[in-house]
Length: 241
Image 1 (spheres, helix red, strand yellow):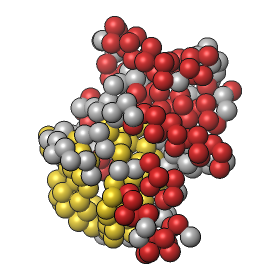
Image 2 (cartoon, one colour):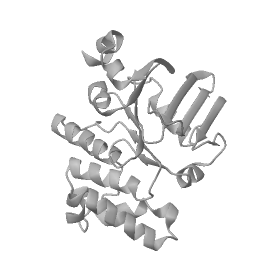
Image 3 (tube, rainbow, N blue to C red):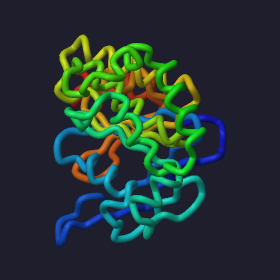
Image 4 (cartoon, helix red, strand yellow):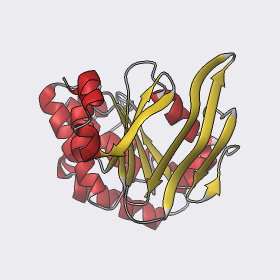
């Protein structure tokens, strides 16, 4: 965890039930501004529920969520996005028949009245990802998997967020594209972006993270610096073997 005490996201003792089924049990997660934090775990571990709870799609049964110091338990998803949270969903979820640039501009929808700022954001994304600029007039569905990942990340950056949530960035990608995807994440993080990366690929996630949490059956069973977790024998047996 970064030395900065300014927290961009904090989950305090958060519990979530789906009916009578416990999905998250008293979890605590903290992300300081500028940190890249990995949330690791297998299927049905609670990773997706955590993401949905931060975004306001799922309401916590108890506990507190704070975004940039402000309580957000009852905030709508649209309000959470306006507060500076952006999402790169699993499998990218681009609109395949729309052009690359049209997909990117959708990311600035929450700031649709700020035309100058949106043009500056678009120029920034094109500077970060020159290949995306080259493909800007193409239909997004014609791009390679790696190019689509760039567009999905660029779309999230269009709102100039303070926190990016990434859901399973390695899902469905070849080993070469997984490596490229995590290089892109590092590139965005180097711009000072705070990030929460939800991932099953512990090796790749910990290689770029500052800090990590491990979920199992809805509970955090391990946490620590990425370097510490990478050497943890229990984690090695479960995820790194």
